[in-house]
Length: 256
Image: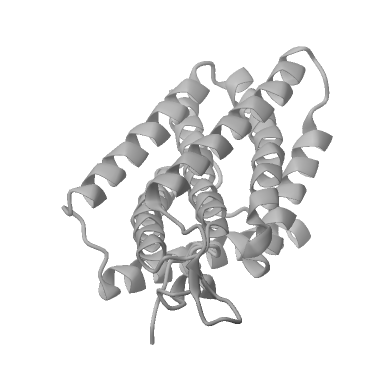
């Protein structure tokens, strides 16, 4: 069985097309090469989406500390971001439009929940941002200098672990909705903290899969819009990583 990135964007079939996928053959039989996906182009678009996330987050952050109720905006942003993710997964050609939409919606959500965490645990947001940035840079460096190589076995393990986490979260959420069950990853017990650490490790390992699939997409000379597609996928992983750092730091702070 062939495993790809667990990120729903980067395992899209567009990444597995032939190296000539960005070529157009005219009726005269002349091959014209369109703009192609590049690693640098994908990273530039990733930074642009990150800037939009931060800008949108600043809006709900300010609103929250001004006393406004930001929960409806946060929920709306989360839903809108999920919708953008799902559409992009099936229609990567629209990624140039869906990418900014996802970043803005997700930024509104992140700004709201970050303000809520910050109000409870002053200083937690800057620590979570710093931890996310350091994790990204370390993973990027390890991948760039081939210290960590993405093999088939590596993919299999990371994807299996990611699917297990998703299943665990979904089951816990469903049970808590309809029963008095409290998932063990809630609270600040040592078990809960250990689960958060494990989830963060898996989220970080997903970054390696993301880097690898972006690189392979560029090598396969995919169409230019796949840069936006890859950028969205990378942001999905980074947002997941940041939220998990917030959760972990809040658990640790509540034990003080």
